[in-house]
Image 1 (cartoon, rainbow, N blue to C red):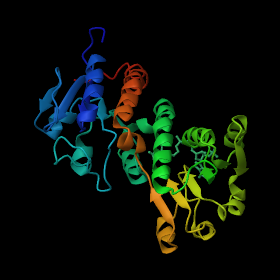
Image 2: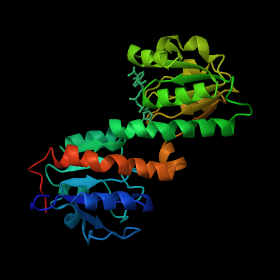
Image 3: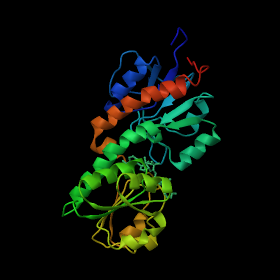
Image 4: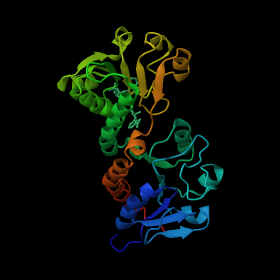
Length: 301
Ligand code: NAP
C-alpha cells in the first residue's frame, strides 16, 4: 500500500468457505487479524489472544456471510466468547467499518447508537445482482421438489420484480410456467413488460390469488397478510425468498394449513461453491473502492 502501514482487518469468524476470500484480502494488502481458532490457516495472518488485541487499530471488521443469530452470536465464530454485545462495542475503534452480510433492524439500531458505520455486502448491488442467479435456480429447485407436476403450465405468481424476482421470472418463463409478475413500482412492472412477462400492480394481486398453484415472494414486507392468505388454496405452494421480516404471515399460514416455506440463504445453502466464488468476485474490489480508497486516512495498526 505505497509504503504506508497496512490497513488492519479484524476477522470475526468464518468457515472453510471463507478461506480463499480471506487470502484475497491478504493479497489486497490488508493485515488480517484473527482471534480464536480458525478452521484453516492462511499465510501472513496474525492470531491474537484477546478481543482488545483483535479490535485495537482495526479499520475494518469482517463478518462472514453466515452472520449472527438473534442473540448477537456469530454462527461461525473463531472463538465462542465473541459476542456482539457491550464488551464488543466498547473496544471497537472510532471510525471502524463493520463489513457484514446483512443486519437485522435491532442490530442496525444498535450500530447507529454506537456510531459504527457498516456495509451490508449481501445487499450491495454487485453482490445482489450475481446472487439473484443461484437464488432463482434454488427457488426453482425447491419448487420442483415440492410439486407433483411440471412447472410447465403451472399458474405462478412472482411477488416483487427486483433483481431476484426478475431473474426468477425469466427462468420460469423459459420453463413455460403460466406466470404473472406483481410489483409496487412502475419501474419494476416495466422491466417485466420489457422481457415479455405478464404483470400486474401489487394492489391487484388479490384477484389472482385464488387460482395460483405456485407463489414466490421476494418482497421484504408483509404482503401476504391474513386477508390475502385466506384467498389461497391449500394445494398451492408458497415460497418466501425475502429477507426478514419476509412477506408471509407464517403463523396465519400454518393456521390455514397452507404449504408455506421460508427459504433464506439459498446461494450459500444450495450452491456453496458458487456462493463463495461470488463473494470472491465482488468483495475485494468493493473493499478497495469503498473502504480503502474512500478512507485515505484509514491506516490502522
Ligand atoms: P431488490 O432488487 O431491491 O427488489 C426488492 C423488491 O421488493 C422490489 O420489487 C421492490 O418493489 C419490492 N419491495 C420492497 N419493499 C417493498 C414494500 N414495502 N412494499 C412493496 N414492495 C416492496 O431486492 P432483490 O435483490 O430482488 O432481493 C429481494 C429479497 O430477497 C430481499 O429481501 C433480499 O434480501 C432477498 N434475498 C434472498 C435470498 C435467499 O436466498 N432467500 C437471496 C438473495 C436475496 P419496488 O420496485 O416497488 O421498489
